[in-house]
Structures are given as structure tokens and as C-alpha cells.
Image 1 (cartoon, helix red, strand yellow):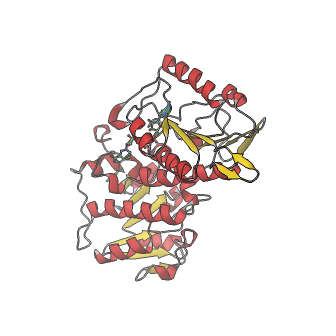
Image 2 (tube, rainbow, N blue to C red; image 1 turned 90 degrees about the vertical axis):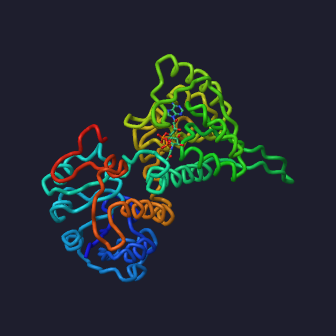
Length: 369
Ligand code: NAD
């Protein structure tokens, strides 16, 4: 019988879990055995008893040794991966660009490792798309952090002590996280603007009640993503943005270009030009930041302008983020396991081929990446 396993996440501050009791039930219905390290779901709000029918073990080592399939949010350490069986399957957010010492272990032990960040953004992949599901939580939390740290209300208020004008919130980058940030800021009553270099985001921003900030720069790249801006485009964007930032109270930046460090969009000078009491929340802090004043994992007070660079925001909403993440993994696993619990990896499926970073002792051909 195939054993699907999880251990406690090891990365500092990681509260999410790769399998919830709901996906445990669904997997058992597919005829697989579930093996769980005790306490694996606790930080996401799930007790061991919630995982009905799962086999529990105190020791991560014991669980790893029995796993045919290991599900994870972030990859375990190379030392832990060495405990997996030869030919084991690992699925999660494996951060292939940081795979360093993990990749040789996968190759040595002929693991089949699937990094779901590498799934193509196609319609069929949506149910497995961990980038989207986790970005939604990150965008939501980024706005809540901004609302909490800003020294003002977001909504307009008419009170006996006079009228309070609503906060002006600008969301930079209107991908999955940015659109959720716009929706959240709007629900809190702020005046919301968004901008992106992909022109199709205008309609999406407006449909959420936001205003599209047109900086006159359009940079559509491949596969629905943005491309990096040319020097001239960047200069134009920066000049117009600098003038606009003097008027806003809160900025949430979410801009990213796949495979590259986050584009630097908000410069030192722009921060210096913002009003005291303004807040910048840089959701791109993990990949270097969209703001030059961002310090990942910290808050920097820049002469009265607070620049916040939170890390792993999805983990802050661990319950719902885990529910979505584990459904993404379950849907992917359904490509590999049939209804009798038998594993058969269909490499002719592009979702499988493109997310695979190691199989049978080799890295997949570049053409499949
Ligand atoms: P992302 O995290 O790569 O980037 C976030 C946003 O930053 C993007 O909207 C991008 O255009 C923007 N950006 C990049 N450089 C910028 C700059 N210099 N200034 C301003 N904005 C900048 O993007 P994402 O949220 O992962 O999604 C990107 C695209 O993929 C969207 O079109 C989205 O609809 C699409 N998508 C498709 C699927 C699917 O069909 N399976 C799933 C998710 C996303």
C-alpha cells in the first residue's frame, strides 16, 4: 500500500501544513495509507486526533523512512531527505532555485521531486497552483498589516469630532496578491488605486472598485507575466510614480517578474518624498523588495515613513493557507496516483513534466522546464 506522509515543517516561522484532515480523508478514500509526525498540523490549528485513520509517530526520522510520497510546504533539510527511501516522491514548494544541497540528495536516491512553483499557469493547473493560493493570503495580510500600522483610519468617517477623510492606498503590481490586496483595502473603506505594467489589469482593478493608476508604461511578457522594464520605461515609471506617492498614505507593493529579483520600483528618494505617517508594506521583501529601503523581515522608520518588509505572509493565515495548499497538493497527487492508490507518474503530462526537478537520478531535460 502506498504511504503518503508529512512531517512537522522545519523552516523558522513556518506555520502551514501540507496535509489537512480534509485531504487526509480524501487520500485515504483513494486507498493510500497516511503517516504523520505527531504535532505536524498543530501550528495550523489541526490536532493529531483530527487526522482520522492516520498512523502517528513522534519521530520525523521514522516517518521519513516509511514514506513513499512526502508532502511538504517547504522542503525538509538535505539530512532529512537522505532518510527517504530510494525512489520516493516529494511534492511541495521546493524552491528549486535554492535547491543547492538538496538536489544531489534527490539525484543520489533517485527521488521524484516536484516543485509546484514550476507548474505552468494554465487553466488545468489552477487547482494545483500554490503560487496563486498562497499569494491570495499574502495580499490580504499585507493590507491588514498596513491598516494596523498606519496612524489613521482607512474608511471615511463622519463624526461629532468632524469628518475623517479616507486613506489613499496604492497597490503596486496587480497579480494575484495585488488584486486580493485591492479587494481587502476596498473592503476596509480606503480609496484604492492600483497599477501594473500589464494593461489588462486595468479592467481587473476597476472590477474590484479600485482606480487604475496609468503611469504610461506597458510591459507584457510571455505566459501572461510581466517582462523586465527597459531603462527608459523604468525612468518614466519612476518619475510619474514619485509625484504620485506624495499624495498617498499607504503603499503595498507586490510586483514580481518570474525568475528575477523583484524590480526596484520605490527608491530612497521616493520614500523621502512621502508624507510623514505614510506606510509602505513590501510584499516582495522575500525576493529583494520593490522598495530600496526595505529590510526583509524588519520595519524601518525612514524619517516618519514606515517601510515594512514582512516575510512568509501566507504562514500568518496558516489555517486557510494550509487548506488551500493541501488541496493544491492533493489535486496534483491525483495525477500520480490512481483510484486504487497505485503510483504511476505520467511524464507525458506537461504539468508533471514541467514541475519535476529530479527523477530517476537525473534532472529533467531543459526542454521540459
Ligand atoms: P507575479 O507574482 O509574477 O507578479 C505580480 C505582478 O507584478 C504582476 O501582475 C506583474 O505584472 C506585476 N509587475 C511586474 N513588474 C512590474 C513593474 N515594474 N511595475 C508594476 N507591476 C509590475 O504575478 P502573479 O500574481 O503570479 O500572476 C501573473 C499573471 O499570471 C497574471 O496574469 C495572472 O492572472 C496569471 N495567472 C494565471 C493563472 C492560471 O491561469 N493558472 C494562475 C495564476 C496567475
